[in-house]
Length: 351
Ligand code: TK8
Image 1 (cartoon, rainbow, N blue to C red):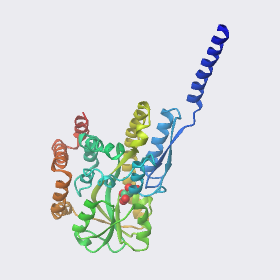
Image 2 (cartoon, rainbow, N blue to C red; image 1 turned 180 degrees about the vertical axis):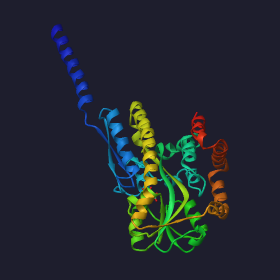
Image 3 (cartoon, helix red, strand yellow; image 1 turned 180 degrees about the horizontal axis):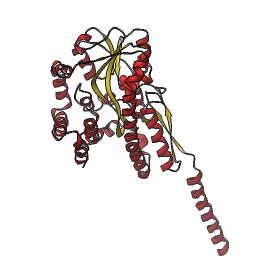
Image 4 (cartoon, rainbow, N blue to C red; image 1 turned 90 degrees about the vertical axis):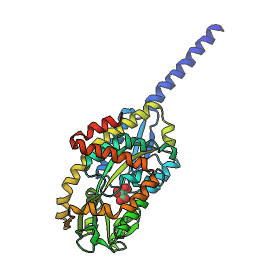
């Protein structure tokens, strides 16, 4: 009886052991749903796929990220809300979308603040950007990394625009961010906030005259088909934030969280590289597709900043002067030290 009992015990142990082995080897993968606004052929789309592939490989297939590009799951704002509600796992909106949740995000889009990508990388990957991302968990979101949307340029179907001050009365779609709406109105535009997936049709039907986005988006979303005029204005730097739902995050073991974090940063570097390469190539392609290109003059940035002083002062107070000022201090340190030391400041700032 005693022998039988122990034999049964060891059979039981064997069963438990083989169940454990089988469940790690053959457990159905956990599928995480990811949605983005841009097409799969953009740097955002390609980097998301790379992020998904890395996560799947490093978790030995335990996590599979399923990508829905081109706004299939809705616009940025809708997807952010779905993440907060735990109904979607991952998205990568323009950071301006997050301003109603964490005010600081608006400062990234102050017109003519970032002058080059090295400055943007240093601020966003450094102390300032990491402090802002750290405010997201209170909003049921986890920010894994800043990716790049890029410098925004203006397109329209009315006439060539060589000065932003000449644009008065032009009806232009802007992102749904109050600081941007106020800034464009202050510049004289008839600014209409609208979710991105509606933009192509609104341009085509002439519901709006123009829009503004980085060159890779103007190309990939075929805005050139309905927008003959491109103004190389670089008026706003635009960042993406790779987000995961806090509910999803909390349900994952620490080892998988570490894999997601490192894959997000690795894909970020690749995404920025692809975005900069595509930006450099896009201008010729847009010209070849018939766009007429105007450059704004160098005085423009300064005069627009002066024109926007009241608007930006208002947002400085709203965000909290300290938060914005610390960004400017970091930026002016970068500028006095020269572009070459940007990454040194980022390293120092992220300590
Ligand atoms: C795509 C958006 C878009 C952004 C905009 O989902 O809305 O204009 O620049 O690229 O994030």
